Image 1: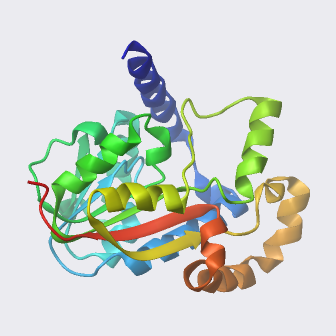
Image 2: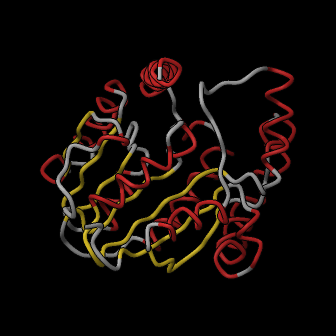
Amino acid sequence: MNDLREHVKKIISFFDELGPSRNIDEDVILNYEQRVRRNQLADLIERGCGFILDAGCGAGRDMIMILRAFTGEYIGVDISLQSLLVARRRAFEENSTNRVNLIRADVNFLPFREQIFDQVLCCEVLEHIPSWRKAVRELYRVLKVRGSLIVSAPNTLSIYYPQKLYLERKYGTVHPYDQWKNTFLMKRVLKGLSLIITDVRGACILPGHICYTKFGKKLIRPLLPLLERIERVLCSKTPLRYFSYICIIKAVKVHSSS
């Protein structure tokens, strides 16, 4: 228990520091990866009113995409106060504060009653939660019957994963807790809650970590528009989606947890 508390403290400290300082848009490869990932997520979000939960919203990196894809009310939850302050500023800049509610909370202990949300998203969050299965149960608890759950995480079956392990051995770890998942593992957990899987996708088969180098960025930059169009098909229509950098699953809740 003490080890878990220490993990959580380190995670909060890490994201409190990262949230205000990180600007993904400044890096051509990170920007590409996030754009491809958001395109897939936007396709899965159901247009309409109601309530949508962005569990682990961080600094609001997906908030604007969600607000444009969904006409209802957005509730963002994150454990990092500093990240939420950045998200609040982004909502103000987008003139969307009337539709945005931001709450500091642990995804393992969501401060909501059962079956309140029409849609729940949890994107690249579970890999940072030691008790991630408990977090999934919480997402399930607050989701309405016939509501949809979208989860995504970095993929242990992708070419990125051995590169990640190599870089961690060489330079040390960056995240205090960063345990990647894969599509098959997450599907088992979701099916164990009697969720019906309705879509499986991926994001970013290429370009891989080699493109974080200056040489790699120069080499790949002219090809990014073409790669983006190709990957949209490969990561949604072919088995290659199971080996992409990000695995994405959409599931529907068919009955209550009681």
